[in-house]
Amino acid sequence: MFMVDLAVPRDIEAEVAELNDVFLYTVDDLGEVVKQGMDSRQAHVSQAEAIIESRVDDFVHWMETRELVPTIRGLRDHADRYRRHELERAQKMLARGDDPREVVDVLSRALTNKFLHLPTHALSHAEDSERHELVALLSRLYALHHE
Image (tube, rainbow, N blue to C red):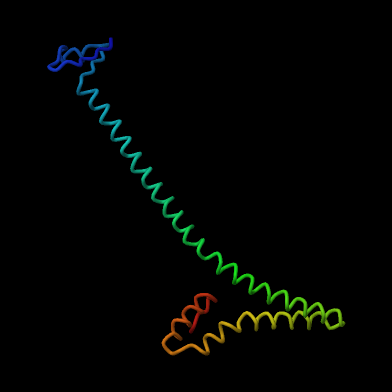
């Protein structure tokens, strides 16, 4: 038998719940069920807030990196101009009949020199006040480890 006592004060004695096959629920029992439901929902709210905060952080980071796109594109375009120029030069050397090993060596040296020219120039012409910062930045960019 299922009994619900919603009255205050109680209409059904508490001892009735001790009888076999009797399920007695009171306002307090229903209040506890509601409280458990609220606690469960509150726990889910906390989880949802953590997920939202993580996603917002990810989105803000993504937005901040979007500001870098023109710089990255410019850097890549600059490097690609070097590459195309040296490739044309190497193709002309090969067309003249130069030794392919020598052509590859000249190509690799020329690219290395071109890629390192601007950072090297900036470092050698830096003011004393910015030299240490530039050394640290170049060391980080090129993963250099000074001994």
